[in-house]
Length: 294
Ligand code: G1P
Image (tube, rainbow, N blue to C red; front, top):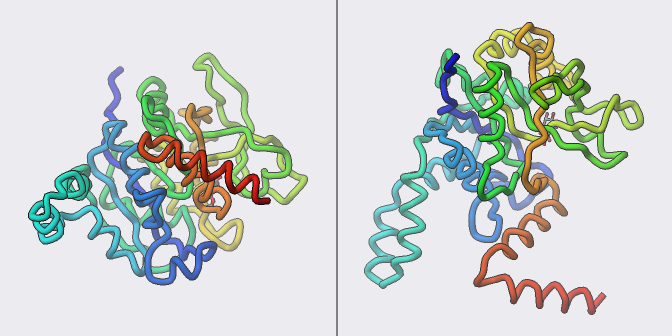
């Protein structure tokens, strides 16, 4: 059976960015750079490398900068070229042609499940990806969301990225329980959004990548506020896990960074800087120097 390929994605970007204030007072946290690339560009690059052509960005307030970032900037490109800064101009131009961006607005901060539901009209009746900007999955050859798309294409079931987190961290994540079946992936039986410390039924945590069938729309519409009084994506996905098609937890390959956390953000910056040949040696020298100072 051939299943439709995943070509559309929802990227929620309507959060208040409270953990990065005051930096996020006037710009969305998704525009904070990892070295010199906005987090959302890294996330969308992952999607593009997995064959995604259309990205629905769910915006809150202060989000024009995201639209501008993925738009042409003729004056800037022209000025850079007239100064001979062609590499910079090429980099600026490449961002504007990488993907089709569809902007929708989440008018009230009602939660992640509600944010994804705001993409319904733009996505329609087809399977789609969801990528959260707080999670970076660094894999140059096998993009994280593509690993999930393959599982969807093979099984026809929704697939979500999971990783085993350290003991004591479970309360910060959606946690799943299940057992491996013939596919080699975890058939999810139980899921709980941010269990109270000490109560988690496993250490399999959801990391922000999902490939979902359109059957999730009515489930999202029927989801009532859960953890934190918000409409949680995890609660809607429980309905998929209980359906005959089921839901798979897929251990994604790649280095995961929690860019939504201050230390995780700094770590991501260092790790991505170390991947850049022109920066690597200097960054290593800097880290060694700082280590000796303390
Ligand atoms: C969201 C999801 C949670 C998931 C996490 C991954 O939570 O609700 O299930 O484990 O992303 O980063 P958030 O971190 O947005 O509070």
